[in-house]
Length: 113
Image 1 (cartoon, helix red, strand yellow):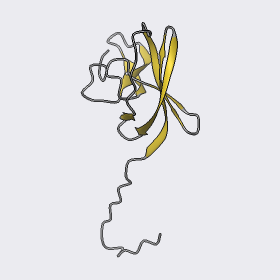
Image 2 (image 1 turned 180 degrees about the vertical axis):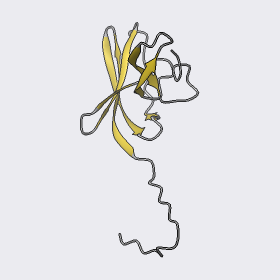
Image 3 (image 1 turned 90 degrees about the horizontal axis):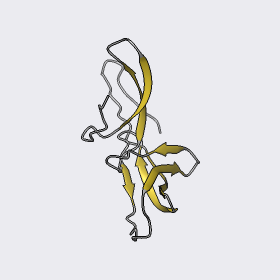
């Protein structure tokens, strides 16, 4: 791609969200279910192909998204449709810690301390 522009003009380029393909896996105490999914890397939103879960699966242990190149992303255990991101938090006593928070601003795990 060749971009031509006048140096006297301000130019703003916005890259589109990067959508990556992979698989969503829910791990249960007695098995797991994997289905194709995509991840919007800008928002952290997952688009998961629906799958029916029967009553033989008891307790959900965890969920994750694995990209086609093998990168793993933990999925929020509150909303189940966004990945988690690491954030640094500082407590009132000055103690610093790293924790994971949801990438969905509407999720209760977004700003929870």
